[in-house]
Image 1 (cartoon, rainbow, N blue to C red):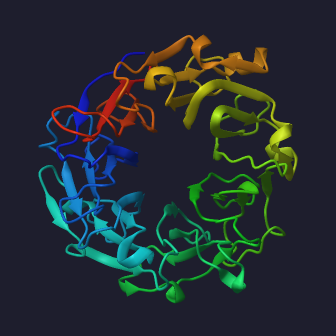
Image 2 (image 1 turned 30 degrees about the horizontal axis):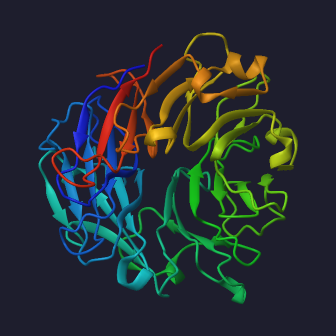
Length: 420
């Protein structure tokens, strides 16, 4: 694997690539778009943030990207972004962009039509937004995580799930919550105008630090979803179609710590062991864990892991399913690490066959890997995969928010073609 083109940030201290993700084909032209946040971009004021929307064909100076700015400082715009459906039939998907620091940490989400995110466009919110959601309580951080849940009720309509991780429902401090909104809602909304959601059930769990749309896991014909917490239950998989689920009773599966303070960012993987079920991975400091019995056991702990990717002093920042890349009927997993010796990290592909033949492998022993060549950039801090489309093969996008090309902490995003 080799690093391809790199897009460098253009504002000192902006840290482009702090967060990023794939958006799908926003305009139907056969090319997949992605977004990258310069979370600390000071253009509109300290920690205002900004979001770039671009493709692998964008020029290295970002001239071919669209840029979205917030209206006030300390918004931290770009903490989360999600692409949703084309509700008006104009041929463009819609995009939700969040800034969880907006107005003293109340947080806000804006929904834009992707027709406004063409190359070279520049928007300052709320201008151009067709809907918005504004938090009501300071320091609750509405919008810290977003996910579009397609066909949530089985009627063809999508739901926007919004994480509010520092909320205190039922006077349970910082237990967190997730709010649901009909994606096609218009106008200015508040959390009380949603259509359901779920609450954290113990203090300090901060439910809603991450949300992920999933396929149908439980076989009821409806897509499901995963919600992450900061501690305790690291990941909970919940069924689609239930507007107000209760935890832990309505959880399909839970991955929880053992009381030793474990934390990890968990995500659904492919079928890495060939048993016909999807598996789950959790990225953490010094290691990543893979659980292959999640669909057969409603509760697993970190001690039930079947495989460990050992990263030693590096932090595993990303795990992404890339499907069966080598034709052996086992799914492969893209991973990224950062903050290793000398500041370097790794980006690599963990073959399903490797997981099938060992219970631990070190990142340095992974055959398909690319070592970052800039020890100051923190490459691998954020990672996503842009799936193959009509105009290109799949590629990884890798954020290095501390890259210093022609400035201080401007950040950067690199593309890495994924071999098949």
